[in-house]
Image (cartoon, rainbow, N blue to C red; front, side, top):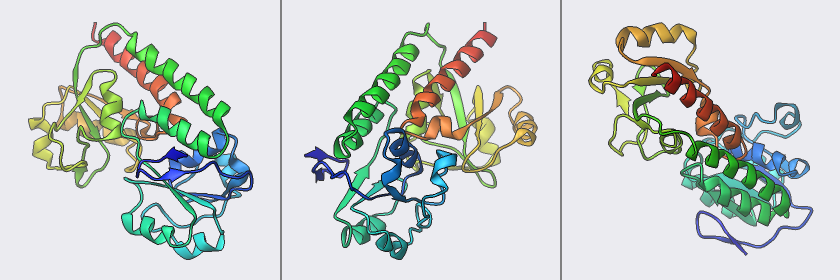
Length: 267
């Protein structure tokens, strides 16, 4: 038996398991584990791997799951996430799905357990170990970097109103690996709204404009540089910092490269 993040025990699945995944980054992980042929349903936000998910039927979004569509697919397993899906969806799914697997990675290191959980449930232990080895190598590379200077970092995910992240998020814990300390520093709410005047009051040294969920682009760089003239303002691919699963391996490599680049500029 394997234990998920809701303390539910799951026995190893049969080879004919039918999987609906309601978590975009985990849909990608399932394909990377070699389970693509068993993925029979996804959300509209499950877009990777792009050339393979096209054949998989959509079941709504992460927050507005179409339960009737899931039911018609007759899954043996549905994968959900505590942050991305609702408790109401979870409760409804348990009424007709034999196994609802709950995930909740809170830091990059938690992906090691995620790989082991899904690899164990679906008989892909070797593929899971290979991913774990690659992730651990990236974590080790970051840990071996010369001491990086701490940077007060504002990570913006929305505009009108401005929205940032709290330290109690996967993104913030990812950035902390390279000593980027997110502001504001209070834990709640997890995604605080900020008045324009508050941006300057927080006095960030580094401002990262995420590509998702708000599609920040080059045109927004000048706007933030005008508001925060003393800060380094950069765009960042949000999937590299907020997607867990197998994408986290590439994400950590990109983060390490950006941190080294900024450290070099500061010398």
